[in-house]
Length: 416
Image 1 (spheres, rainbow, N blue to C red):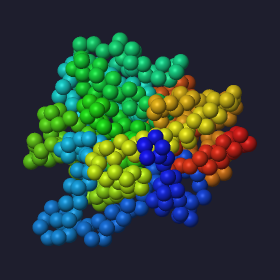
Image 2 (image 1 turned 180 degrees about the vertical axis):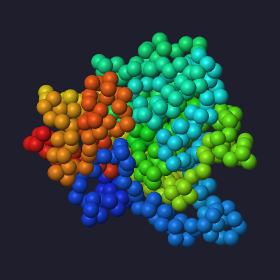
Image 3 (image 1 turned 90 degrees about the horizontal axis):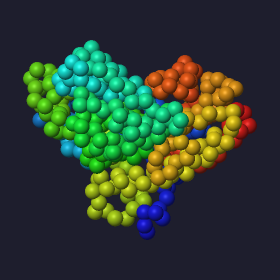
Image 4 (image 1 turned 120 degrees about the vertical axis):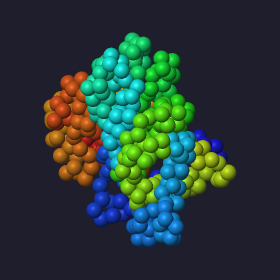
């Protein structure tokens, strides 16, 4: 059986997530995945096992401690393999915001007065504020603005912004409002020709397919693990050659011990270990759909990524088509997913109702979503949208099913 003939077994997928059986959540259509996803049973099991048997200080020689440390290391190694990184090139921190603030403080060693940092107005604030604050260290902040015609970040515009003084470029791999997937590989290629360090925000990309960071050739890449079916932690990848040269942001005795140098306080132990459950879930997903067993972790992830993308495209396109057809609704971003060029994160506003009103109606009908600016207030400002009322955002992931989409469209049609 070829990959093209295989479809995601949605019943199997949903059977792995206890939320779909839980009395509190089982009757809801959950469309707020971009804010944080449900977790599979594997993650819950790993968290429970750690808290039950190994909730001690790790890395001592007695068995509870030794096993705790081994599992912490294993979780890190597995996630490195999933994104095609070395173990010493990733760190697990409390959140993407924290990771990027620490990174920006370390990277300011490369900034001299008058140097330029490019940020976008399409990003989540987590990948804007840390870099804008380097203005206090003499940096000039240059804004790469998305097109108001199609809401896209145009690479031709980036070319016009780059100068010999540009040192850092912070850009989202996928907007949490617009939904478009930016060509990060092409962006990195252009930046590296000009000796620019690129920080890619994958928070809205990774839930729909873990990236290959070496293929992207990005210098730093981050995403939130609580949006990729895990606990409230975040991953930061950095190229080894840059990481090892960064000034220490941690305890003095850890100088030179990268990546600990930019992870002050270290990870939450029990939640770190529960990340093994994410790997187990994706591995089980692979084994359920494919027979070939002698396949690397990364290649397993690539095959699952394709299954997920195809399924999510079938979920998103009917919603996009419907919203586009409504003259009283304004869809933000592309009106069709084609060849993975858009995430199933769909934002819209109404010409006649507030986003809050629409969100309330959806919730009254057991559709879990919300209205907000989702920390992308600069994006909403550029679009002329009230940042307090925000947009209505329907964010899907691979465990959503077509019957939920049909129900959403029915409620939108009858009550909005």
